[in-house]
Length: 318
Image (cartoon, rainbow, N blue to C red; front, side, top):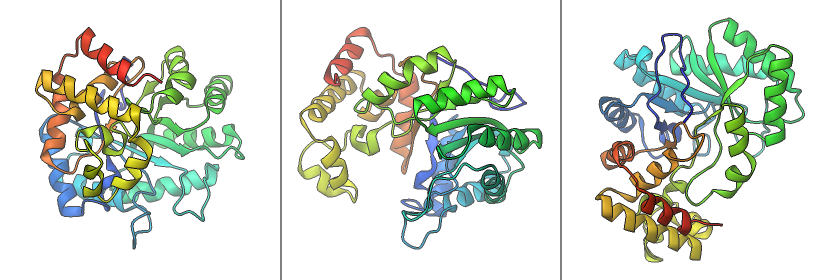
């Protein structure tokens, strides 16, 4: 498993990351503060967000998640105890475009720093790659931000494997900052793309992988066990359409079997499986209540044996 230090003070990331897309969406500021307090009180320290979260909520414009996190950090006075990760380049609406131009990155980092109420970002990530923009232009913008002390490390999220390789190569050739992490979609259901296109690359280039949708938008949490269960949540229909097929039902059954054996939640097993995969540093998962944080703890503690891993792998074979 790759281990990387994200700060000059050698602050180590606990390998499970809070997904900040819920802030300003399913959680208001007061609720967000409460769940973040519990998250750090139980020993975790890394929070991932993006400059455009949560623009999709009616009345929001983007930046709400960063603002909530920044207000919480200021209230707690714990900036040096947490790892703040945010992203740039994504859309702020369906009519906007991806943007990784150097001038845009420099403009947006100032807004993120202001909202996060901090002088520096531990991991600043290319959210979506704008392929019309030269890679060198993007990396030189990051270089300036690192030299100014505003960013410590850089990573990438939604980027084609060939562009990711080219970015790594240009960084070496031009002596520019290089991506140290990759944030792809990867979970027990969504395996094929990462395993076919990115896993070997991450291993060869010593890239720390921090996958998003670690619980497949909640599908792997154990709360969806029948047709009717999808009707109980706002996002249920979309999740059902994507995941509730023969393979999905097989995965849910396997998760329940292994979870029952270890007396933990399905979420904990799904996260524990991810933590065992080659190149995975730590999955990103959101939480809206205490039981979700308990699943994070169980995921780090549970010891899956070879039989467990075989059951999970065979249920999710593709």
